[in-house]
Image 1 (cartoon, rainbow, N blue to C red):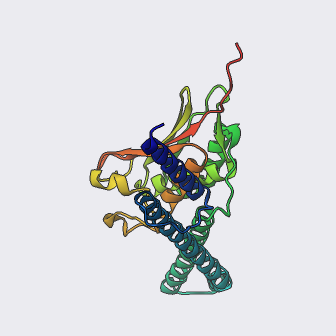
Image 2: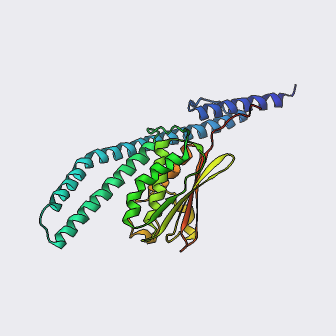
Image 3: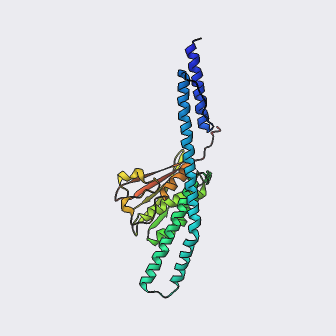
Length: 290
């Protein structure tokens, strides 16, 4: 038997085992002699060990960020509640128009701060795996109805028509109802936010062989072509969006939720002609028993 083949086969098996350990998170560096084959093994060992340490460092930093956000959430809960309470008490007093306006501005900013902190906490928990998203077969129509019910207030405030034509038959997709409702609501809120007064937001469902597609289309300002790849990035906001409330986590959170359910999101838009956000949720798999 060829000696070279034996050594090569032995090396490949050892490297394969090292990679298996690395993927399983159980890799530990060992000592090797300075023969040529062992040099290769040693270099692979060093690379995998450094990769393991980097991964541990990233996990540690993520845990620190999560802890920091949780602490901020805890420490700001009472001050924000007090500010909202005091604004409510001020609203009951006899104030001038200017004073009423200022009190309203304080209340609005307190609400924005509360929304930001809650969004950051949800994002942090989702990324760290604390929030477990468990997709099961559920009614798409029921999920959409729930999201619309929660978004109607925002739409009514801008006199925007929020429409959805229910499907004649029940359409089922894999989803975590609670979190997918939030993902869809984030998309709807985003559409309402960037649609002018008296505009329109339509929701449409299309059924495919492997996915259920939910389209949320609006008559808003649209998105510049160069910005389309960025819209789902965390904390990203278009330069011209400074006039709108938000911190750039809603669409990111929506994408992460849908991906965790085995689906995906895409967006199509023309500047000045509105946007269409499409959520694709996997249909339940059923074996063919024929």
